Length: 436
Image 1 (cartoon, rainbow, N blue to C red):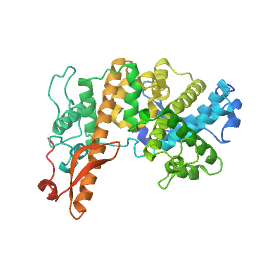
Image 2: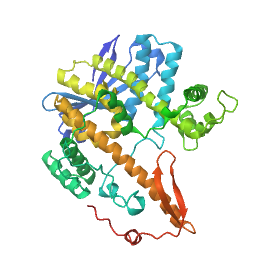
Image 3: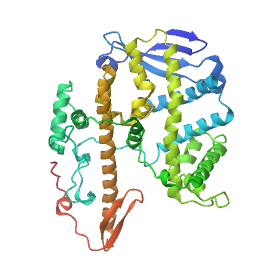
């Protein structure tokens, strides 16, 4: 066990953590680097606070740093440590510190909401649309309508079968001899993104990242006065409850399965503005939730910076490049650290690994296209699932219903017309869909 002590950047303890799994992945040695804060910020953190990253040594001698206990834990711990460091270095006042703390809670809360993107595409059935889930008869998959085409619209659109074929070939090329269905889909999407990289202007990068993380509300259409009223109610409610409960009790109150938080905020009749519709409060909460990602990014980025300065042996330029691409804010990702987008990592894993190994900025448009693919597919899958659930409920009702009109994702309902419903023969017989 080695240690380093620095009054400015904190102390790092290096602990051997070599295990069989990491050795089989090709790493020579694995260590955990455990950081404890410098004296100037210890009073602002729990007594036993630490921030820990895993350091994997490659055969070429280079080090790769990854979260030691998962991305979610690293983000929450890093944001907490970063707030203390930020407060110390920028001399934040009580109101500023409180704003960061509220955003820290909202960051956790928004990830529990149904709007947060959690969709995974693990096999070909996840890509297929059953008849009852289609908005139009010619919609058979959730794949983007241009998937497989090259820049300029050349080539043909890939079916699910072609995606899987291309994915299997790409998997073999990069050294995955027996890929899972999920890996084949990821490889296929990677191959498609390389055919048609997406050039996003700087003004569009934040929107791309937001769409990949969760379905947005409609806060832009809310009256400014109403938005201010609702934001104040949310912040006041959080402030009143965050100190008189355990963290578990507080998070259950804020975003648990039985939480009435939105209703409490909406139905304050005697407050300025009076009662507001639940959908309006929801949209403002989602907007604050997105802002919370940037608050957390500020804190986490400074924690990562201080951590890297405290490492016993200074990072080489290549090591620093990899470290910064994972843990520091990056303009190409809407000024978020890539770790903050970790929920989407399965979809961009291959492109990201290529990006951190090679200093090649041309891979960024490939990453952007992968995120664009995922946003489109996740939205299509979610819309189709809602539509299918509505049809299933209608089939179980006495008269049955038929959907007419276009599904509205914001309202969450469709126009209905009473009518006897005939179940599609293919689905009634439980036949396997032909994935082409």
